[in-house]
Length: 104
Length: 171
Image (cartoon, rainbow over all chains, first blue to last red; front, top):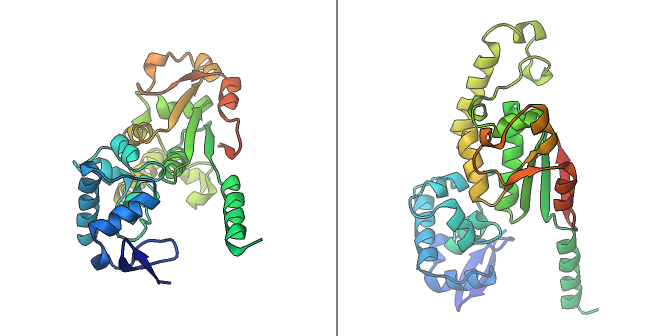
């Protein structure tokens, strides 16, 4: 199911859980607004993580906490502090990619 | 009640019932039990749920430095193996099943036990060793994985499990 939402003045398609369904509709304004809804204030470090996540998505690599820790961009501890309470889910939502299906 | 108020009331109820903390008690250290618990603990943290593991009895092996990367799958007394008990007891059978399982785990991006402990710690999972079991096995804290949070009595562990939305699991 896809619904249309206006986020930061842009019309974007999201699913029932609020994840964007078309990464081409993503931009930094949308991301910042989504981050605010998740209680995250974006800094340079956040953007670096978002860039990495989008890059992995484009390469069709499924993300996990372990992979984030080995990314060279962020370690697991920092990842949890940048995106508290469910980092992989939150960071994916802000990055405009589908909810990760990983259990680890 | 207006629609919006009703919706917010529903959200509150859902939020109250939300799991806030998982307290896991591990009393066995077969590879499958250990992985199940580590995945549950890590999965909790990934959802913003607090997680603690209390290692007691044979579960202590999963945090004993010299043993933790050499845990095995049980091939005897495990009907899900679909292997006759007599065969399961043959020399090498347990090693074979263990190495098969480790290979499959790696394919799924599930780390070895030692690395998994590092991930759990970095994710904010608290790891506790059971005081009585330590005494029973004559284990010193120095023999344990270096990053555990401490040695606790059962009472102190229960103390950490108080509060609404906390669930206790034992295996």
